[in-house]
Length: 202
Image 1 (cartoon, rainbow, N blue to C red):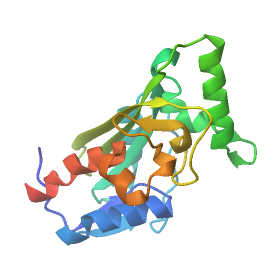
Image 2 (cartoon, rainbow, N blue to C red):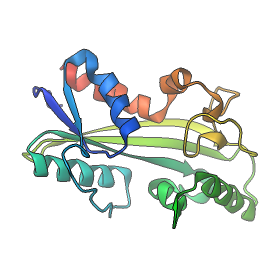
Image 3 (cartoon, one colour):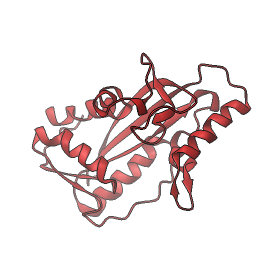
């Protein structure tokens, strides 16, 4: 693993919440974190069919445009009885002409499971892939996951995305019923970031 010796990191996201989350994680390491929006970077088209492929597109585009090391992520939910769908297309399943509707996406996912009479438990996992790219083309990949099952009806008002229908293994609560602190200890993104921060300790 290449050690991170820079003092500034570009996070290739226009999501303010995600940017703040990453800033908080990296604060103990004294790294200055900037977002793609404040650097006026466009969002590149995600044309790959894997999480790592799309994260690489975003990270390398940002690193090449700014000359800074850049971090990008791609994440989604994989449902086993649907052969891993929606997977890398998780956000697409929620897309409407007026924005993303994850309630619609969850209903669509459960209906797809019903249509093939998938037995319980309907196992699934959240996956998150982080790619840290340098302007010289080198990158490092950090993957996280959390296993669980789908539940219906949806439960909980916290979290986002598919959280109301995902119950992680070993817990009676869905992600949307958990407080942020509890979820962030076991989530797919937390798993990936635990591996990622080791690059600052190298």
